Amino acid sequence: MAAMVLFRSRVFSGGLLTSGIWSFGVFGIYFFSALWLQNVLGFSPTEAGAAFVPMALVMAVVAMSSQRITSWLGIGRTVALGMALMGVAIYLISRVGADGGYTDVLPWFLLYGLGGGMLVPLTAAVLNGMPKDRAGVASGMFNVSREVFGLLGVTVLGAVLSVRQAAGDRAPLLAFLDGYRFALVVAAVVMLVGIPVALHSLRKPAPCDEAAEPAEPQATASATAGSAN
Image (cartoon, rainbow, N blue to C red; front, top):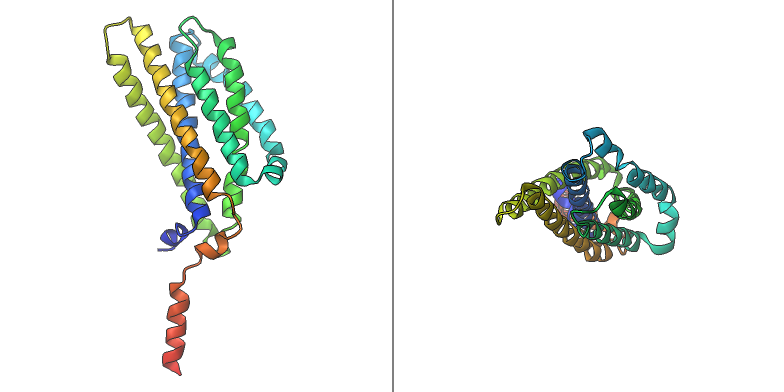
């Protein structure tokens, strides 16, 4: 019941959805780009993992400055800008052809990390507005939603890749590349959907306290007091 009350808050429900969309894109790009690095570029699993290190470093650096960005733009605009950068980066990665190499995708990996770092304050901004007695429940729901949306990202994008890969009569490598690129376009569109969600739901985080508080217990308490009198 307490969990359902939290969804009355526009900031909480919108923040939860925005965080889920972020997880959808993050899990998808890491998993399938690792396959691309191995299947197309011939990277070993270790080399494929190391290829994401620059992206992670940029994300960490931006995360350290994200509070200043948030104080300047506001949490809604900061998150929306981050989602936009990530969506654009995913789309540009999808444009790299069969003859492309790691240096062709590295700038877009870095752009993706730049956008991802801007989403770091999202969870804290939303949870700080929750009533203290429900902060634990809200935090747990955020963590679960990330896992669920991340799993959906791998599942849905994997299905898109497989269907696209199976269409037509092409060499296996070209078929995989076509499916991978199309799956990234889908992921980019999903990420861009998060922009209006963030702008609408996170524009005024302060009222979250009032929105999350249920009115029924107060009404019940008043009625009980009236009966006692």
